[in-house]
Length: 437
Image (cartoon, rainbow, N blue to C red; front, side):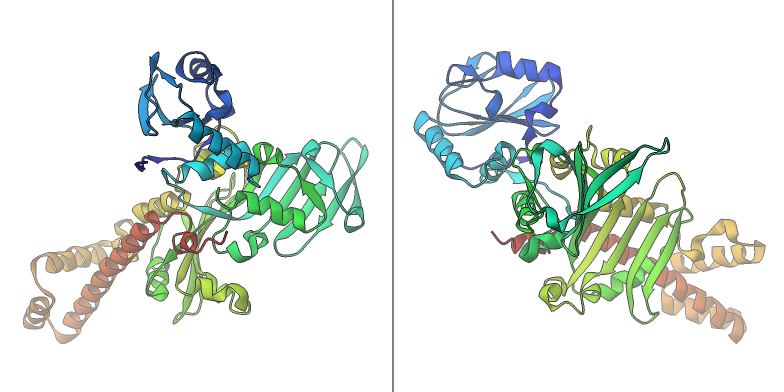
């Protein structure tokens, strides 16, 4: 069987597809064992993925059954379909029936990964989700605390609450929903990978293993994200040079915080100067944070962690480019949140020596002169010229400014180099190679 590698986003349930396209697919596009093939159609926002047997109709034409992956465009949507003979399809069905992964969406994700290069550009660390109460059972009520609340109108009601530690941090249960807060530490050996479509099943299994609640399989399709920290792990040869480079970035729209010491910077935070929503991203040394935790320290030895906090429903939809807050939709997103935000900060930034608006007349004159020297003379030629034409003190002053300008240019080059590394990360880059099944 030939295995082309079309690039597409991971599939999610067809229920996320536009209604008019769903109807088209059910009634016109695909026929599977003489009936509509809804249970074998998956949609990810741009593409449809269809698993089909010997009979698949595309634009009213019967395709051959030669075990191929092919694509067709229908009403502006790219449709990718897998055609198998009946024996192969029955083997797939048996494999799914015997698989521990009973969730239809996740199963087809695993299946399609054999053929497609999924472009997952991030993972999730800290996460807050809500699940309809009907999909969650209480396993051990003795681990829960009853907490009383009251509304502004004075009505009282109770919630069952679990206060955990690392991994499963918090569970809150009422009559209608269950709110769960976790960190990727719940994944144990796959903590470095984080929460992705690959680790989604394990994520819920680990929560269930705590023994407080049991999340049923159908909950995966109904879980909604309330808040999340989006991460990328970027493997580098020298972490410090990138921390130093970002520490010199100046952007008037962001408050910058630097962690560590002047000689050993361990992280840089950019926080947008707005009050209506939170926009915060950090570039930091995860190994430094975990220095007292040998369990994961080695995994982050050469890693720069980039992490963005997304704290509202509206921001989640906007940043991931999705129409709802479902966990499946978030994890299936083809956006690259950390790269996009960091690139915007850098594009808008200016080194201190370039902020012309803050200069007085003398500073602006010096600025123009220094840039002229930089553009028309080598470093050595500029030194000779300065000492020939100016006093020693004045010459040294301009030599110092030339060095600052050169350093600013080198610094920007390092920042852009890091952005290219970040842009290339997929499923937490190094971590995805070490994914533990």
